[in-house]
Length: 281
Image (cartoon, rainbow, N blue to C red):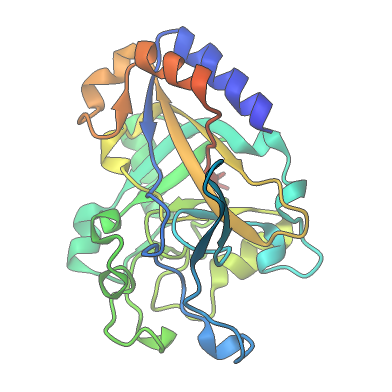
């Protein structure tokens, strides 16, 4: 996966594309869904440890919760017998980017759930959503990151029933990505999108960043995630690749010109990840 990701990025960048990073920085402040009441009481739910083993080589051991910050949910997260992170096919990790902007609606209704009508209106305004598209909801929620109280819309993080943030309605959810803590709205504790999609093998992506920095159509999203056997999820990174003709849509945040990026790529391997695909039926 690392090799494929590296080569594909080099090829696309060489063709004059730009890259926008859609990933929040991962550290001890990265929000995570508070599920303390459902885990072993002996576990440290707030665990994030980074231990230096060798100063000479700067070698560390890092421990963290799988579903924290910008991350992917493998199908097995909500579906018994579902695919783990290592089993998700690479074909599902690349596709045309589609952004459904509901920022105004989320400002007036923190529980807003994207509807089929929103998707139909998108198509009326911007054209048909292509097969294999990677669909992302932009609710403006990324601006609240990493303040957990603002992200979850609650002052009581121990009570999921108090959470308030946007997501997708059951009718509209199908392989989706969101800039909020969950594809399910905070007011829907039954997690209907998770329970509807993941038994069908759909990976889900959460805490997507910088969606204001890409056009609602015309990008290519490349997703990658740690190929962890038995992994139920993991921190991921997402890049949006933009043609030169789409440069006018970018606000400049976290974008990299192709010349500079090729030099960077030659020095380091980049990970990518964080969203999924939707099909209107």
